[in-house]
Structure formats: structure tokens, C-alpha cells
Length: 259
Image (cartoon, rainbow, N blue to C red):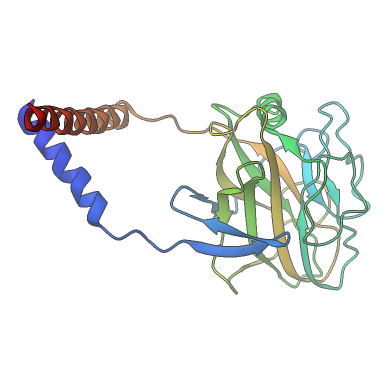
């Protein structure tokens, strides 16, 4: 046990002196957001999930004229960002208002999603262990449009929970494999409600460029979130034990010096 604690202590000390990767700062909605080590980096997937958005999967950021978009069953609002095509750039937050048609570009809505609302919505659409993805429905003129970035934000703590393509001037070209409205062409994967706080406020943000047709949409789709493996829990317990042992040694040494 002593050798195990000594090994754990060594690893903890090594982590303390290893330089961390520099945080990335992105201006969103009129303020700076730090993308730190705690943010999840989302993956891009060409897998097309089943289900039509709004009827099976609630929309969060959508273009104008989407059919049957407002999800009144879940009371789930979304941003109608008015994309009718030929836009150089579109940068919009989600909104908790049922079909928010007045939210300006790069503006945080006055009404957003609560943690409790997101947890309930993901469970309602079939997310396992709180897992969900972001479906992207692209409509184009057979020319690609560019997804520059996507963020999931805790507005209460002003923290970036998840990000896609966080580097400045980066992006990925999207050419719809099945052009049309209502179903996802692509997904951003790796999201979970496991870290959400019920009374916190949350929002999504998406930025696209070279929009040549419309409308495009972002919406929630269900997924299966991984749970920590037994070995991961064991490592965490060992780490906490090492920290406790260090604290005990420090207190014990102070008591000896004072004696």
C-alpha cells in the first residue's frame, strides 16, 4: 500500500509541474470565453441519425421556413435565424423562446435552456446515460458550406462545456449527402447532460460561412454516453487516497514541529 501511495504521489507531483496546454480565448456574444482543459472537444460524424427534427428531435438553431418546427410538447425553444441563402456568415445562439425570430446575430437570448430542461429533453428523445449529439441539416446548391465552430456554454458559470473546431479561422466544408429539409446530414458527437446543474442556464452557439442556400438547422439527437469504467474509478480512488495521504503527512509533520 505504501508503494502504491508513493507511486500515486509521484504521478501527482509530475502532473503539478507539467505545463498545461494554453487556454484558447474566443469572443462570443460580446464577451470572451475560455476554452480550457475541462471543455469537451466534439467529434464530427457523417453518420445520419434516424428521426426528423422538431417532430422527433427538438431544434436549437434553425433557418427560416422549417416545417412544424416549434416543439410545443417539450416546450423547447429555438432560434429562427432567418437564413434564406446567400449569406457570407451566420453566427447565432440558441434560444429558449418558442421560435425566436428577433434574436440578432452573435447575441445571447434573454431566455435560455435550464439544466433541468435539457436533461428532460435528452431523456425524452432517448438519450442513454444523458448522451446526445447535434444533428446538422444542410441545404446547399451542390456547393459546400463551411461550419466554422460550435459551442455548448454554461451561461451561469460562464464556462465552455464543449466545443467543435475551436481554432481561429478553422472550419470544415459540408456538402449535403441528401439535400433537403428535416433530417440530419451530419452530426457533432460527444455531448452529455451528466455535468449539467438543474438551475443553471445553458446555450448553444453555431457559426457557418458561405451559406449558399437555406435553411440549415442544428438539433438534438439521442446517443449513448459512456460511463466511467471500473478501472477509471479505481484510478480516481487511488488518486484521492494519495492526496489524503499527503494531507495527513503534512498535518502530522506540522504537529511534530510544534511539539
